[in-house]
Length: 67
Image 1 (cartoon, rainbow, N blue to C red):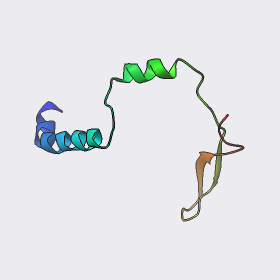
Image 2 (cartoon, one colour; image 1 turned 180 degrees about the vertical axis):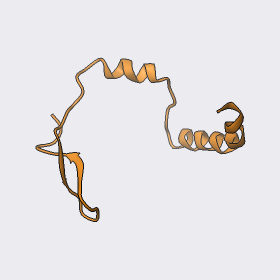
Image 3 (cartoon, helix red, strand yellow; image 1 turned 90 degrees about the vertical axis):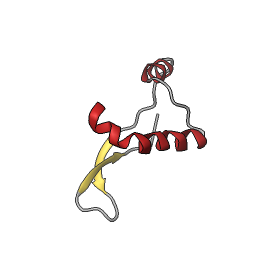
């Protein structure tokens, strides 16, 4: 990735700048994990159902929503 990624360095730097200007805060995944571990995360059942505009059944949040 080091060699190939250098071709996209300017685009990636621009993307990071746009995120920061939009208010995003960049941090390590370990920080996100630590925050998530402080409380139980909400869950919801997953069901297969038709989605308008798509063919076949797709996995989607089902039931009464998050708990």
